[in-house]
Image 1 (cartoon, rainbow, N blue to C red):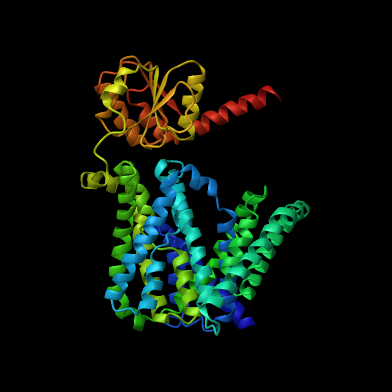
Image 2 (cartoon, rainbow, N blue to C red):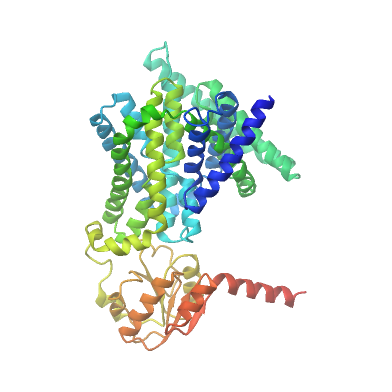
Length: 538
């Protein structure tokens, strides 16, 4: 027992050091933790030989991960991003699965192994993408909302895939028809039981335990692990049970509190899953898999974004939005590694296949991180090449835009821009909103007209009613976008006033030096207004 404790302490110390290096290199911790597994495993230091303690912690970590996926399952988000999330998500999964399967066959893999590898290549990491987009303040931008929407679709697909694998993947003596009937009947009864708990038991129980935050968290973990264990007993996987346990609590008022409380626990426990995965990598076998891993990685890094750009281009989205959203699928995810590990547990793939997919994960996660971090710079360089993914005809004719006068022209129809436009319309002003979402004109209030356009297109202001407008307002917080916009509207003869948005003091100072009349800082301004109200009422 002492040896296990000492070894675990040493492994955690190595994980902290390697994790620090990874963050300095702007790499996700998934890459760092797999590297830790390699370092402490038999291939290097040889510290990790007994896998049972690691496996237990790893299994609980995966259960918590799937519990949080179910807990955060926001079907409303998929609906608000329109059909693009569903069509793009399913289209990318179908394309990658089919093409990836034949590509894996060409690389010499057996059909069943090729199927596992192809399916593993379809899933992208919601955790990594949300973190990167959040750091870049792009979660609320159109491409961020669409990316999160189709990543949720992927999460649903991976759960369905796990259900199918665990239900039909093991050795069975029954006929296929009998097995299908058993799975359907068992699954229906399981879902009915979860539904009953959701409707009549869990809300009352949570209100009782929520009197103590610590008890609420412990109860949630107990619920997740218990349902996961029950699901495994029924013949499904623990992952499926944990997902349903989280989904059962998704409609409760304690959802966000539980999600924030369990995120740290999830990350800590997943450390052991990735360490265990890395410790099983055999470098003697990986050397022979490098060519195949490079081919599959190139397919994921290039093929997945291309299919997203094709689908979004057909649906009328501009090349910038489709390119930025497409980068979200340029890597495989932790679910890919979990899925291939599940196949290994079922005896359907070899350990070499686990190593191959892990190697693809290391390559694609590492490279796609930099693609997303420097997405705008990359787009600026290759923008002319991406025109084939964009419709050539505009949504609304230029003559029609210029013919209808407006008091205010507002760029951006996200949360901030929508509120600005609505308040101005309530004040009796005619507002034209320019947004690059072709579906942004849904549910617009009276007095607001939404047109399709790009804030960084220097020719587009020529089609707007600049002569009659009093203000041009940009609700887009990007310094570069605002700089281009200010220069463009002035070049096309706009003599009115300009207001732009900045999220940081540094951007506010920089854009303030341009020809603008007002720099809006939503976070600072909201804080000032609320503090003033607090002081007035004190």
